[in-house]
Length: 465
Ligand SMILES: *[C@@H]1O[C@H](CO)[C@@H](O)[C@H](O)[C@H]1NC(C)=O
Ligand SMILES: *[C@@H]1O[C@H](CO)[C@@H](O)[C@H](O)[C@H]1NC(C)=O
Ligand SMILES: *[C@@H]1O[C@H](CO)[C@@H](O)[C@H](O)[C@H]1NC(C)=O
Image (cartoon, rainbow, N blue to C red):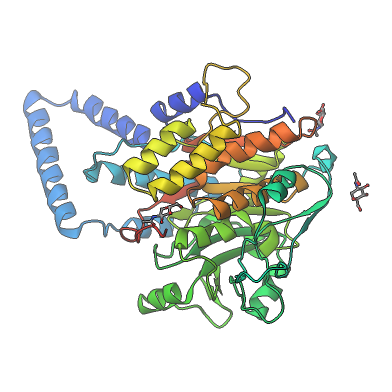
C-alpha cells in the first residue's frame, strides 16, 4: 500500500501561497494604462489627475467606512453572463479586493489556480475503477448488553474494545464499528435520528455535497447557484444537516425551508437527538460517514459550513479524483505539517481539554506515530496535518474503511480530527502493506479557490469534557 498521490510537493505548497494567482493582477494592468496615458498630458494635468484620484480614494474610504461590507458586488454579478469558471474567478477576484480592508494580524493565504474543466459537458467518468482495492465491509448495527450487572449505556459509536479496534484496520471482508450502533431492544436511541422522508430522499442520492450546522455555530452559506451547472443541480444532492435549534435560528433570520424542504440548493435535513454533547463531535458524523448516510452514493464532497461552494461539484470530482485516479482527496494544512506542532497549537488556542489531547497523543506515539520529516523523499504523505474542511471521496472500500477508522478515533478520543488523520492513515498503511489506497493530498490554496471562507458565527461554545 505504498501508493499515494498528491498534486504537489511541500515546497510547491509554500510557493503556491506566495505566487498565488488572484484578480489583483488585472487591476495592476489598469493602473499601468492610466500612467502611460498620463505621459501624454502636461505635468500640471498629471498633478491634477493625481489630485483627482486622491480625492476619489478618500471619498471611497469614507464610503467604505460608512457602508462597511454592504458593497453592491452582487449587482455586478447579476448582469454578467459567464461560464462557470469565469464566474468563479470573478468571485474570487472580488474576494481578493475585499481582503485589504480587513485589519487582521493573521497571515493571509490566497487561492491559487485550479485546472478545472470548463464545462460538465466534457466530463468522462473513468470506466475501469478495478485498480481500487476490493473487499466487503459490514457495519455493526446493534450491540447487546454484556453479561454483567454493570449499568449499560448504548453509544452511537458503540463499545469497541482495543482488540476489535486493532483488527478493524485490516482491509478485508469483515464487520466493523462505524457509528450508528443501536442498543438492545427497549433501550433509547443512540442518536442522529432522521425523518423517514429524509432517509428516503438520501437513499436515492448518487452524488452528494453535504455540510452541517449544529448548535447555530454558523450562518447558512448557500452554494453560488449560477456557478453550478444544470447537470449538477439535477444529479447532485446538496444536503445540509441541522439540529432543531439551528433551524429555528435560521428561520428567525428569514431562512425558511420551502415546501420541499429546500433553502436555495440546500435540502435541509433535521437531525434529532444529537449523539454527543460536543457539537463538534456530532459534526464529524456527516463529515466522515457520508457513505453510511447516503448508502447508494458513489461520490461525496464534504464542506464545512463556514464555506460557500463556488464550484460545480462534478468538476471537483473530476479534478481531484477521476483525473488523478484517486479515491480520497483532502488538502494539507496551510502552515502545519507535523502532529507535534498541531498538538501545541491546539493547546495554545485552548481548542480542547489538554489532558484528553495528551492521552490521545501519548497513545499514538506509543503505537508508532513519528514526526513529519519533510526532507524524507519517501514520506508517505505530503503533510501529516490536513485542513479537513473540504474532502472529496469516492465511496470505494478503502476510502470507506479509512472514513470509518478515522471516525472511530474521533469517537474514542478528541473531536480534533487533525490529530488523528496521519496516525489513522499510517496505521492503515502499515497493516495493509500490499493493498493500495489512492489518496490525493492537495494544496490548501486549491481548496481556497473552490469555496469561499467565512468566519464562524461567534466564539464557539466551550469544549465538552
Ligand atoms: C492500475 O495500476 C497499475 C499498477 O499499479 C498501473 O500501471 C495502471 O496505470 C493503473 N491504472 C489506472 C487506470 O490507474
Ligand atoms: C469477500 O467477499 C466477496 C463477496 O462475498 C467474495 O467474493 C470474496 O471472495 C471475499 N474475499 C475473501 C478474501 O474472502
Ligand atoms: C479532561 O479530560 C480528562 C481525561 O479525558 C478528564 O478526566 C477530565 O475530567 C476532563 N476535564 C474537564 C475539565 O473536562
